[in-house]
Amino acid sequence: QSALTQPRSVSGSPGQSVTISCTGASSDVGGYNYVSWYQQHPGKAPKVMIYDVTKRPSGVPDRFSGSKSGNTASLTISGLQAEDEADYYCCSYAGSVYVFGSGTKVTVL
Amino acid sequence: EVQLVESGEGLVQPGGSLRLSCEASGFIFSTYPMHWVRQAPGEGLEFVSSILGDGSHPFYADSVKGRFTISRDNSKNTLYLQMGSLRPEDMAVYYCARDGPTGWHFDLWGRGTLVTVSS
Image (tube, rainbow over all chains, first blue to last red; front, top):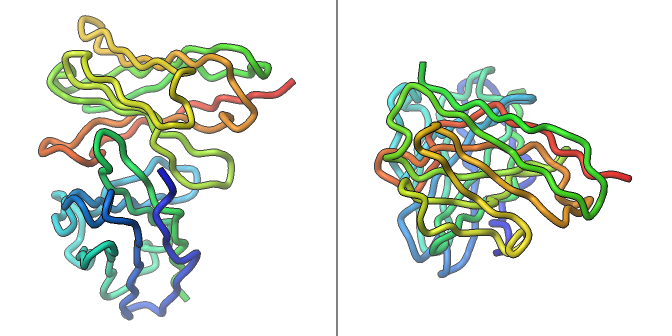
């Protein structure tokens, strides 16, 4: 149950796009289409932004999108906004348990 | 209002025990699998444990297996985490989370409760 690998940080200017990768293994990311992404602002609880690799919950802006290829999932934020500055975590079902990514800090320049 | 509220925050010595509770409201608690997720200070999220809506099939992360027990009382709309043989590395904010309607993700989170393990 090793943590999924994410870049420590990514940054972009308002209006730009950023992509966060999430690399796992065939036992988690590659084995199931159950990857989700969570946004966490400082001192707050996480909030689901993407589930089942590509699906967006009601209320989440369509600037957020997800994809997966092999053992790597990705979250793209298009048209970056100031309020998108936060920590982002991927998560994958891994057969009875779940494994989270190491987390990525998104900075809006 | 649909919400989850954790309680049981406390300071405990290494080797000690503590029970966390998570009270649900605003939805039919018994129909949802529930989870515990923790976050050590300044660190990332870590899955701890899951349980189905009927209280069956508890699952645990390897890091807590044999020391923690998840349970629920659907008559009280409450999820529990009994923690034993606590270690300094168990110190974290513990969140309860609801399984998403289609499963395989966490769609509702509580605010978390802090567990401090220190002598």
